[in-house]
Image 1: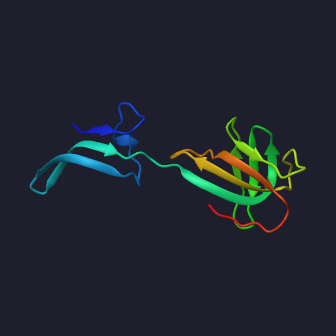
Image 2: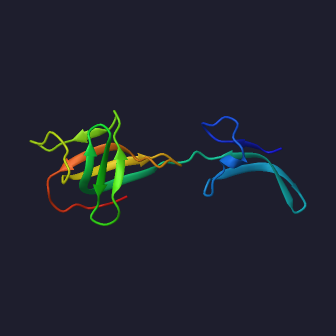
Image 3: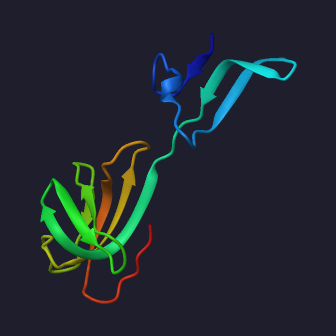
Length: 129
């Protein structure tokens, strides 16, 4: 019987393995056969986003959709810990504003959580991911 270990999950199984996972395997070799006794799955890292673009949709406290100059629009979830920075004289976000959003997508999740939103003055923006 092979035992699986995944940080944060009790009773992990073979089904918890995903292509791309990094693992450490301990077991026994018998000729050309290796039998795994334990498989330790390395912690999965979140995907980080840094997107600059134009606000296509915004619902305060809920979400913001940003369209970079190149590529598809991305929607970020806004949480109580999302920091929003405004330039002097600006007090809210509106469709058409130029913003830079830093976010994080937990491994295996579809939701991207905004960590920080910076409203910037109109002008050329750079985009990174």
